[in-house]
Image (tube, rainbow, N blue to C red; front, side):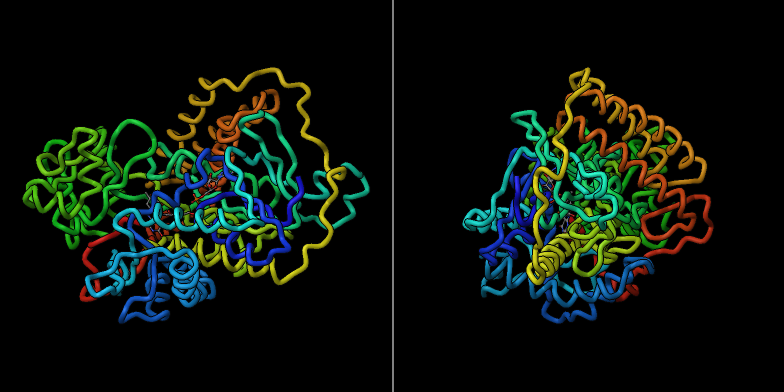
Length: 543
Ligand SMILES: Cc1cc2nc3c(=O)[nH]c(=O)nc-3n(C[C@H](O)[C@H](O)[C@H](O)COP(=O)(O)OP(=O)(O)OC[C@H]3O[C@@H](n4cnc5c(N)ncnc54)[C@H](O)[C@@H]3O)c2cc1C
């Protein structure tokens, strides 16, 4: 397979890049996703919304809020680019090109939502299912572009870097660059090289390496692991944002219970019915910053052996009000026999967002020539040590556009001929991918990361995690080399690699900062909270 631009991943970042590249009819763009349905991604899960420019808002104010959340680690030029360009692109791409109808009031004016740690109302939303609406609009647009092909059920195995993958031994004297990827076709079971002049990694997050996560099953850190194996520089991998309240039901993916419930007076209780947040944050109690609440819940669970804590909103507001104010949460909980108007909600903290990733510049270029990374898999520097709510969809939009512009401004050069790289070698395969083993190993990775690389870290816990994960990773690599491929096996291999990347980064960084918390560091650098009078009530915080 030969294509001009290969985009790996079809969430908001990959879809935006494809759309912005499609205007150049001379280029063929191929978008791959491992999912069976092209819209299946983290992006469709986004509930709260996407940042625009509020009525009394400026780019400078948004910049200030992002920098304050980032705890001194955000890259100012990247923040400036997002704050200035983001709202313009939202208008150009999502509203004008894709025709997305964000919520408006009776006079037809956009209704801007307010979220935690934002100093202005600036969040555009479509009910509480914004991501789903965005992806539907973007995919509809892409389906009308003759030079864009979206292929589902295609799991990328590894990036093709030349001369690493060259057949010609003399190629080692040529400069290294990325030329596409080896791709596993789930239907045929075959692996094929997709050669491309430019490769764009847009594979999203890694929440599934943790025991509890708000991320869907495809967020396995595939892209981070592939880029790392190819030799790309990775940055800030230790900064994993945990959401304090996700519904505690069996399974790894947990439904997010919005911070807005606590904004409306909801109180966290132990299973014995005791409020506990005052012990952790006498000033803010249940409205303390996300990381403080998440760690408090984790600590209560750990010390008393609780499987979860409870969030009580039923005794605060009448049933009718709750049904109207939180329709999605009410309906979802009721489906699982929890009536939030009558009983407290069992909640646990859950891994939510990867602030770091594959290091890129303002154009989405990685440290490997001809390879880009955009969206959650990348580290643009916007989020620093902690992400401001609802910035991630906008980051995918901005860097999807930046990468497309950069590719369009240059020439593609001659593509690598197919004969230059080896065909996928299937000799020596002894086993079928055993689902029992895959599930067992995945569970081990998730347990290790949750307890030793999770909300509260220490030198000892991280050393243990590295030792155990390294041994597991070695075993999985050996198994991988002798086993016929499956999507699950590829996910396991990447999860093991990604868990190690996060654990090493967390071990190396001794200073607690933002969402990376080391209990053995007494000098924590916190995200700056807005002054009390500007502090926005937790009215959203879904993102
Ligand atoms: C519950 C929840 C609520 C959220 N709410 C908000 C919000 O309100 N506002 C906000 O800004 N952000 C929110 N976020 C975060 C935001 O949704 C994500 O950060 C963002 O959507 C990531 O977009 P992406 O394009 O980078 O990746 P994704 O949307 O995750 O897309 C990744 C793509 O890569 C593909 N892929 C992965 N691995 C492979 C492989 N090996 N081979 C082929 N394809 C592969 C996937 O199939 C998918 O198509 C939320 C996240 C969650 C989980």
